[in-house]
Image: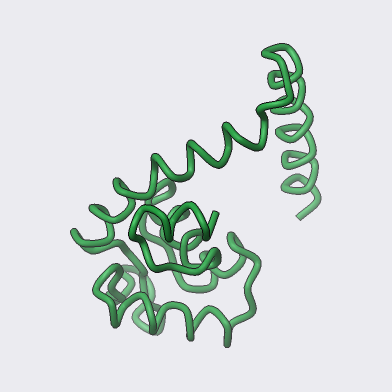
Amino acid sequence: MEAELQSSGVDLRFTQFLILKRLAMMGPMSASELARAVELDGGAMTRQLDQLEGRGYLRRLPHEQDRRALRIELTPAGVELWGQMTPCNDRVLKAAQRALNNDERRQLHDYLHRVLQALRDKT
């Protein structure tokens, strides 16, 4: 994914890509929710958020219900960057599934969906 991003002129690490993808797909969330979504500890998430905020791709805003918490959201530049990264994501997914026929792809997606659901149900 990083190589695909680099070839498209996007200078991001894979973890940063995941953070922006989660925000683009799921909308604003707290830093702890985002850390769980991309499987980072608090310190690592703070460093990544600092870098992405410094580059103007996201912002931290006060949470509406909890004044101790912050809500993380994409900036217009982050939304624009996600639009630029979406074709990269699609190309990588397509290349990863190239050896599978349509039925196998559907099966794979079904298996992964069920595994993810089982993991979510457990927590």
